Length: 316
Ligand code: AMP
Ligand code: MG
Image (cartoon, rainbow, N blue to C red; front, side, top):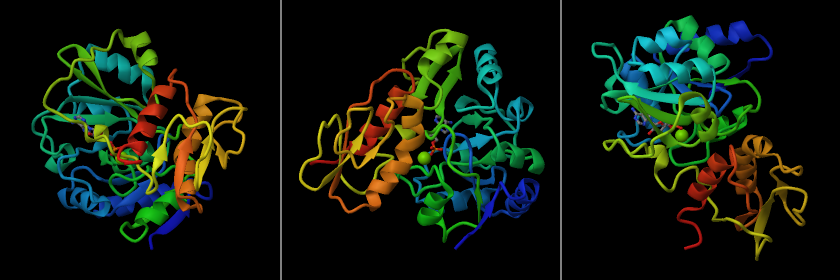
């Protein structure tokens, strides 16, 4: 079982241990503001290969690369004007920007699954500090087995991947709780590939309209329909639990709910609680999970996206 180090106890020492392991090709679970990531040196092909095998992740699903700032990002991705505005406005933060990959870098080909684009993010906290200390790009998908719920606490990582990785850095519960928003910037256009911690409205307010037309070649596999799934059936827009189900409530009128995503009806709180509560209900003595309606506004769009994927394949 991987050792867990609490970042609150001695932050600098924990980051230094983490970066030593990464430098030698190891795998470290690291908290970010979105979810916990499974980190490896993005220029070490063997280490990147270990990410795919630990997660059981299909080889066609590219990884997000994490940077310590825009300078590191510019060594790997070609920023157009709109991409530069997005990075300036939202980094460090919950926005991943997919850009043309610069030729001639030492990046392991598996990081981009062989594509000629790269997904870059400057996250808040320990992941960026590790990249800075290593002076390397860090490849990190969410630290869960492929297709399962993303981890928002160190315990989730230990339960899911504890015997397959080298170290877990414990930074407590994640502040946002949903994965990053993924946009692609190409030929002056912005496409939204995955809803997440930064909303469409926030992006359009600073960088102008998102064109929804697909750019064609990729299927961002985070967009595969069944993803982020608990092992039990999930039923959406429920107003009560039926035989054996547990009700996951929202707002003040959640009578009989086993857990409530936000008693006051706050969507940021729902995002923070969603994955931890799905993990908890998955372990609880119930046959299925019934979820009350969540509004689509702001981060509600990303919350409902994850809920629809959690429910896909259920109740058949
Ligand atoms: P995660 O497994 O949560 O880290 O998700 C990473 C997301 O970023 C997935 O949906 C990937 O498909 C997407 N992604 C990573 N690299 C690229 C890329 N070069 N082009 C398009 N999507 C990408
Ligand atoms: Mg993931």
